[in-house]
Amino acid sequence: MTVADAELIRIDGVAKRYRTASGVVDALGDVSLAVPEGQFCTIIGPSGCGKSTLLGMLAGLVGPDGGRVLIEGQPVTGPDPRRVATVFQDPGLFPWRTALENVEFGLELQGADRGRRRAVATELLGPLGLRGFAEKYPRELSGGMKQRVAIGRALAIDTKILLMDEPFGALDEQTRMLMGEWLLDIWRRTNKTVIFVTHSLHEALALSTRVVVMTARPGRIKSVLELPLGYPRAMESPELVTLRAKLWSEIRDESLRAMSES
Amino acid sequence: MTTSAFRLAILSGVLALWEIAARAGNPLLYVPPSAVLPSLVNLVALRSYPDLLEHVLLTAREIAVAYALAVAGGVGVGCALGGHRVLGRAYAPMLAALYAVPAVVWYPSLMLFFGLDAASKIAFGFLLGFFPITLAVLAGTRQVNPHLVTVARSFGASPLAVFAKVLLPGMLFTLVGGLRTGLALAVIGVIVGEVLGAKAGMGTLINHAYGLFRTADYVALVLVTLVLIVTSDVLASLVERRARRWTT
Ligand SMILES: Nc1ncnc2c1ncn2[C@@H]1O[C@H](COP(=O)(O)OP(=O)(O)OP(=O)(O)O)[C@@H](O)[C@H]1O
Ligand SMILES: [Mg+2]
Picture 1: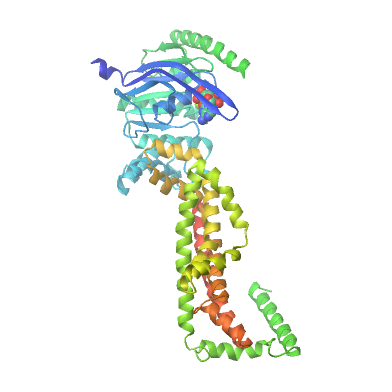
Picture 2 (picture 1 turned 30 degrees about the vertical axis):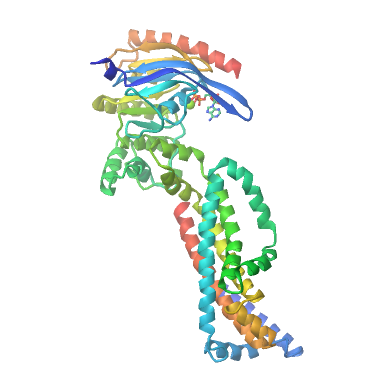
């Protein structure tokens, strides 16, 4: 493997400051991170530390104030749906489209014909547990179902990079674990690179090849934990119990700081 | 009692009162329904005004052109003001203020500018229809959840695709209401324009009959015009109902 393929994503000293009518917020301060192809990289950190902002930069939706973001060596200048698909924290389904039509959205923009769109979307709905809900509109779906439709919409365009901002945040714990297993399965079969944001230690440890811990706002990278372990992971194994304690102590300090500042 | 029976009862009541009241007054100014009926028959049979159809068609054509221009202008300007924050902040309040001015005050200058023919009627119908459509589009663009625009952009939507696939369906509900009001006002604009001064069209006939004290003909002409207006509104309401069912 050459150095160039090793680094699918390179984030180089990016920062972001939001200026609003009510004042200035330093969301991200000097973040650098390189992600090789095929990683399942989880970002974890206190609320408001800039995780969604960082994903927005990778998606080409948020311009960094400093530094640069490279994908396959090219600077990101705008959305690139051929390489990057995003599952947003707020699912953002189109209310006038059925579940199936929402999943078809990206393919429709790419000009795929109706038959292929239908086929791809229908095949995705099954494992998402939405088989009987294809014709339902978002308002007829539960919060967790909406989030799963949003996951289907991102998977439908089959990109190399999948950005997921708390995709299972609205799900109950059992569904969450099942969806995690399903996502792992897809990831392992397709060699996608997943950048995954979560607040769940369990999810981070069960799924990731690498966990990036961020500091309280302005978000910086506090530490990076490599998890060169196989799947499925026995969460009660001494190794994972130790890792969990370590991760918790890192995050605990930052969460305390974030809470005392806000 | 069913609704239609109820309506019929009210209608007969009104006609009866009208008949009684009109017979008591000056027959030149007050026409009873019994006198209108023969006039209406003469009118529809093309006896009193043989060229009625031409006038109806002219008025309908003026309305169609005025409305088409109002829709195009209203959607264009509304999207520009709604999509562009600075433009919107600068001009939206002005637009609302202009809408509040009674539009008839513009009519003399439109006649000076466009003459006595169809152009000034079209301009007046456009002017009246344009404002509610623009304001509805403006309100509509503000109603669309901006997050959905972000989502669409992340999937590679061009500005045109954002308009067609997010803004338009997102504001359809508000838009159809504005389109319907716009139609009603465009119709009023054209007909009022004709009444105030024109060489042809329903408004001219109305003015003519009224001026000659042919009161029964005048009422009959108004009734025909009313049918024209009600038909357009019924069509618009059908479209509106369909659109609402589709979006909600
Ligand atoms: N468009 C924006 N305009 C102004 N401020 C913003 C904007 N987006 C985010 N912020 C601010 O930037 C900071 C980081 O926000 P961000 O959404 O990236 O955090 P996060 O880590 O994803 O939080 P959470 O875990 O709660 O989702 C927050 O303080 C937020 O208020
Ligand atoms: Mg977030």
